[in-house]
Length: 255
Image 1 (cartoon, rainbow, N blue to C red):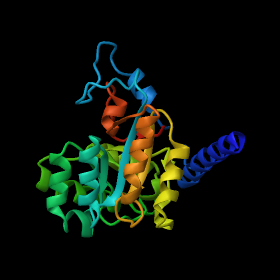
Image 2: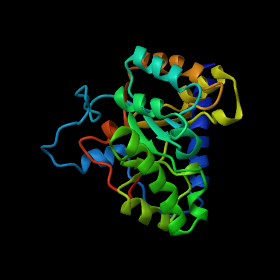
Image 3: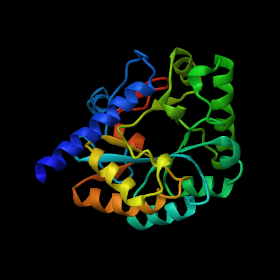
């Protein structure tokens, strides 16, 4: 049985990498790992984690949520508060940020990283530069009006990027954040399956992709956090994962 489980973990991780490669649509764009971001920082720079975590030494992992806020986000925030975990939220502008300003404010007030997931979830690699700029800048403005702070991170829908996406992201001061573990929670309401898919793909310096808008996801989060803590992981936001390095505008970050 141990051999079968190890094989399953390798297969899950390989599938995640293959899926992300397909998502990039054949793009040859270079990516930067969290470890590389840290190593590129000045030698005398100190980790920026509010808790003083040094991810060069600790076994860190970043929990991220896309496409909210939604009806289950308040429950998710309650869980994160109880577990003392800070996450990164890539928020959608239309029908989400505009509809739930109090949740956006709460996400920021409780120490989570607020990031940009476009205005209407259109594939950015299929748009003109002006359309890309509109998708990102409208969400920037909406979040800024609520929180008083403009996001510095974005996640492209489906991870689809090209030179125009990178150029506009750089112009708007946004780094592009991809992922290393996904539960494909859009395809199932089975919380146990979502949990196991993430646990099978988890690794040091990993970035977990989940969606707080799907019914099976939020109930899976407590089990994910508890088991990864048991395995020795420390949860951090994406900026903390890169610290003392910085997320440079336009650059693509992927574990």
